[in-house]
Every structure is written in structure tokens, then in C-alpha cells.
Amino acid sequence: MSRRAVEGEFERYLSQFVDETYAAFDVAAVLRGSNGSGGRVASKLLNNSRPLERHVIRPKLQSYQQQILAQLDPVLDYAEATDAAFETYADDVLARDIYWNGLRDTVRGDRRDRIRERLLARQRSFGDDLAPLVAADSDDFWTAVTESYDQETATEILQEHLEFTVPLREERDAFAFELTIDPGDVLGGLARALPTLDVEFTDEALRSMRQAEQQVIPAAKADVQQAYES
Image 1 (cartoon, one colour):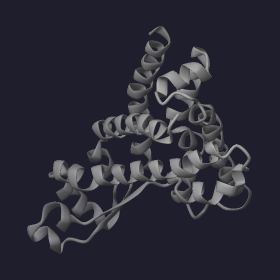
Image 2 (cartoon, helix red, strand yellow):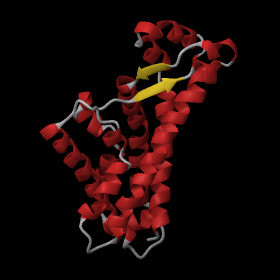
Image 3 (tube, one colour):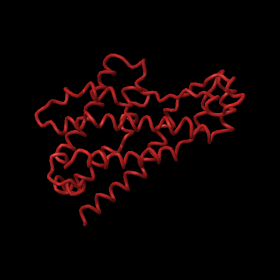
């Protein structure tokens, strides 16, 4: 199968996931959770949440989407190279990992090493599962899937790799998803005199991503069922 066919199908599911996450994201909950000197700025932004969603939240989610797609490159390199060790690609994989890049500075020592190995193991498993697909003769994604796996295995694989929240659920306090909001960029005018606001949205990221998974994974399972019934 062509590498591009695998990339295209993964990108389709990832785009759906990001769209559903954006739809579920409650920016007001994030702003209400901010405190301290940023309270005044947060109050003004609460009254203008739609521009904030368009100019800050959507671009942030899209940046994560691009990181995940970029991470797929070394994973596919590994999947295509039948005689290469995954460790050859580990540095590139981690450099593009949204969780590794969001690891809190307070996570150190053995725990940091353990998280590193878990993140790498997750991507290694992804590459191992993609290897039969990129090696398949068919250029059609679903034909390659049905020729490489039985329906139960294909369903399990798809669910496993579309559960993007697993690392965050396993080590919830290890990661921080953060935003810096410039009120001037969002509201313009007199808001340019307001200070920037730094907010953490880790809890809301997990909640909205979990909701997105509940939409995307059942749809993906339906795709699997259709592929094996056709």
C-alpha cells in the first residue's frame, strides 16, 4: 500500500477528532478557572468567548493536529523499514509528541523515564500495527486492512490508536496544556492595553477530547464493519 493512503486515512480520523474536540471545548470553563491578577482580563474575555475560540482555541488545536501528523512520519519510517530498530526513530518521535512536549518540569527522575518509555511504546505499537498495511499489495486502505487483519483485531487496533487521551488519563498530573492569550489580538481596540493571560486548560482538554473520542471511535468501528461486510 502507498504510504500516502495510510497517512490520508489517519488524517481523516484525526481531523474529525480535532473538529469534535473544538465543538466540545468549553472556553468559559477555562477562563472561570483562571484567577489572580488575570481575573479582570478573564472577565472581559468571557464576554467575548466566540472570538477567543476562533483566534486562540482553534489555532491551538490545529497546532496539536500538525504535531501529531508530523509524528506519524518517523512512525511510518519505522513501519516501512523492516530491519530497523525503533530506537533509531525514538528522538524524532519524542520531539513531535504533544505529551512529551507538555510534560511538566516537576516530573523528573524515574517517573520521567517511565513516561518516556510509555510514550515510545505507544508509538512503537502504532508502527508495528501499520507495518502490514504499508507492505500490502493493495493501494486501497480498507482492502489492505481486511487482507492483513481479521475484523476483531482491526477493530481493536483502530480503537487503540484513536484513543488519543490514554497518556493523559494514565498520568493526569504529569502534563500541562497551556495557553497564552493576548487580549489585543482577540478583541483589538482598547484591549491592547490589557496584559496577556496565561491559562492552563489540561482538565478541559481531557474532557473535550474524551467527548470527541466518543464520537469518532464508534464511527471508525462502523467503517471497519462496513469494510468486512462489503
